[in-house]
Each structure stands twice: as structure tokens, then as C-alpha cells.
Image (cartoon, rainbow, N blue to C red):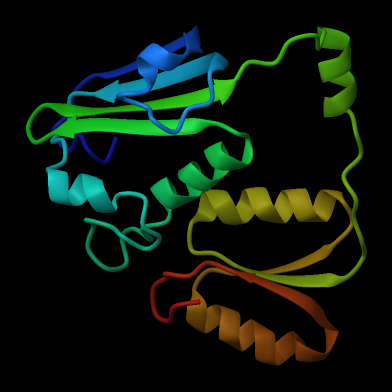
Length: 187
């Protein structure tokens, strides 16, 4: 939605697709097989070739300092790769952007199996964790998840508050989780 500062349209399409030899010119790295594709298209500002070539680089951003971390697309790429998937972006300045993600289709798992996997208990602990995150939504979600599995979570809203909390609780902390780019002081 950042790509559409004046508004626009976001289109989402999910479908099953078989990729094979005919797809090699566009997706040379693809292993042939059945995939589920998720395509996100916007009518935003689009990207030029120079920007598009760098979009998956960690910390690359077109946003002003302090507004974005530049980790979104590199993290998305990593997540897709971890699931043996592929990600392709098509964009032109003034024409918007289409991001297509391909995940290998899974056969043979029924709803009962999926429900059982969702009910698995996350491992937890009782240690103290310092969580430093300026994004309130992420901070609250991470704090709730960690607290739910037993950890004692101390939070801070920016780098300076994180440093202060670290000094105040140094002897009891077992782990520090910190954002990288934050106001006042980077993580």
C-alpha cells in the first residue's frame, strides 16, 4: 500500500498452476511441478529497472531514513525460499507492480492432519527477554507470543529505551531481540 500514496487498486489472485519447460524462459530456476501461486498486483507508482534489480537486497529501501527498514522484500524472499518456493516481480514506472509467489502444492494432507499440526505446542521457557521494537503492532504480537509460552518479556519502544532497559535488567536477561532501524538509536 506504500506504493499507492494517492490510492489505487490492489488485486489478489490465488490459483493452482503447473510449471514446466514452457515456463523456463520467465522462471529459469523453477523445478517443474504443481504450485500454488499468489499474485498481488497494484496500480501504484511502479519501479524502474534499477530499483527492481535491488529490491531483494537486505536494507535496501526507497523510503526516507527511519520510515522503513528495507527488510520487507528480502525477508519475504527468504521465507518463500525456505518453503521451496519462487518469487517473481514485474514492475514498470507509472504502471504498478505485480508480485507472484509460487509455493509447491502439497498433496495428501487432509484437514485433520493440518488441524493436528496447528495444535502442536510451541516450546517455551521462563527466561527473561528484552524485546526492542518501535512498531507497536509487532511489539505487542511478539510480546504476547513469547509471554504465552512462558517467557518474561520486558519491552522497549526505541533503541534508547532498549539500552536503558538493558542496563536496568542486565543481570536477569537471557536474550535481547531488537529491531534494526528505529528512532533515537538503531538496534
